[in-house]
Image 1: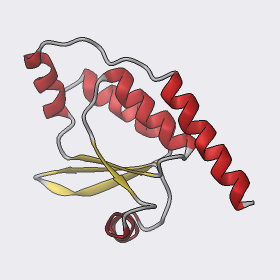
Image 2 (image 1 turned 90 degrees about the horizontal axis):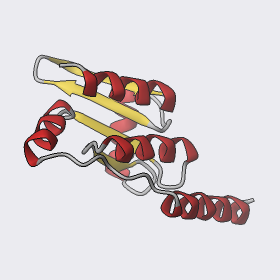
Image 3 (image 1 turned 120 degrees about the horizontal axis):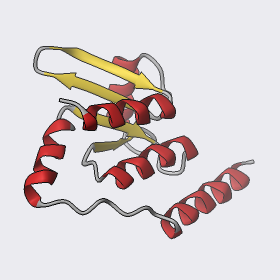
Length: 122
């Protein structure tokens, strides 16, 4: 079973790499404005998780710079996810700002919808 999981993970990464979407072309000022809207966001993920790949592809498609933390390979990231989010489930988007505590969002479709809304507003 471990070998099958490994091979499927590698296949997912290969397909993602071969069909990677392109980021939109923006001026440096436009990209800085988009980057400022993404400040305070951290995505906890596993490299070969298909739902995480889905979120990262959307991030590339929109040209979003969001900090990534691999909860499988980094014990510190795993502990942060467990302590803050309450469960070891990825993808998970940590949303924090200067005025409130961090909010933890699970589910790839919810994360993608939130990112689309955040980029179009504010």
